[in-house]
Length: 237
Image (cartoon, rainbow, N blue to C red; front, side, top):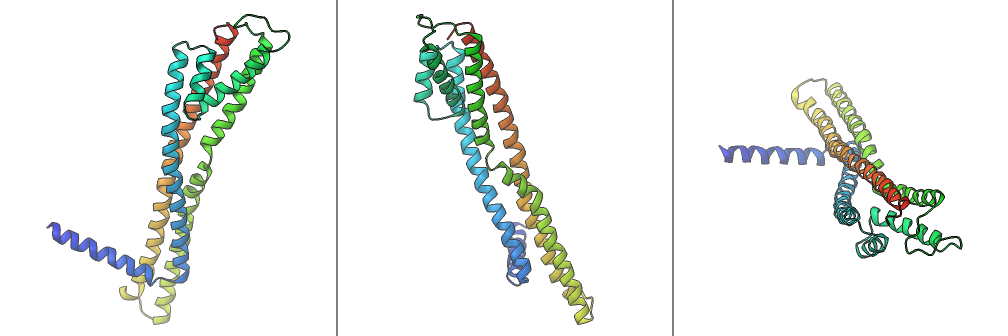
């Protein structure tokens, strides 16, 4: 039973491959375009998975130290020790801004002077600016996935329409409506449809998944900035 199924699958794959090779130039162009979209989409998906894993790992490390009550000197050391990530970049921006107001001629001589509300506002503004940049980095190339998900089905549909049109034209030239006359054009059309969906479906799924992860990271970063500035305003950093 298994050998029969395996033999049938091999025959089908061989027939599809031969059909692609013997298809029209326009149909081959459509398939090449869809293949290019698919290859680039998968490259983006693999890279985004790698980046998000790294961001999650480093963020967990940094946030754990922050929630343990680490002071600014410890956070500075942690931010420089771990590989670059959104939280460390935001924290370093805050530390840089804090270094400015603490070295200001009007600052107190305490080791951890309590900043004024204006100082906290400047620190928060600096953190939000860097956070926006980091979120933009995480969102990079996601528009290509969205474009792939919305465009490739229509590209496949174009190939489908072309294949059906070719089938009817071939049927008119030969003056016959037999299966042998119609089948190649219809099969060519269906291959374009399948290729378009094969490129679109993973791209749409990946886009929604990555966009959801970015939104979660954005919300968590906003909470981190709020807590950081709250501790800063109380002189707890």
